[in-house]
Image (cartoon, rainbow, N blue to C red):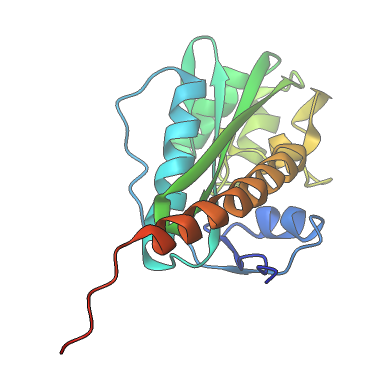
Length: 212
């Protein structure tokens, strides 16, 4: 009997990630993760992968029949991990740090299936150059994108802060679709391989003798 694909859940409320995931061509629903984003990790790659996995796993435990996709994005500049601004003054600080410089955007993605029994992760990295702007221009941009790592929105044509993107543009927006496609294929393949093993294990269990 052919097994149907598991329903897909996006464990993020981000409208940008929602829009990108639509291009996968697979129906999905959104259930934002409630997992904590706190971590003592300082390596950007390990950090985003760990947080993406934590987010996906939290939702997967509550929806074990689904495949759950989690993601986490940070900006890394001059040895510092930069997340979403906490306030307008923090946004100003971040934009000054990035101003006129090259930096990297890291997005970790994780696909968790079978309630956590199967998990696959990837990380995408894109180099980005910020345009050199005056203090007055920076102040006009500060606080506009409080929900985005780095405090800027590369997808917003009205945001002139980013001058150049070298690599995956979707990654800078928040969801590297090429990585997601690979994870989806790996997840479905692993799930398919697991079915015969489950059936074999079930068939090998000794049956209780009928009551006489």
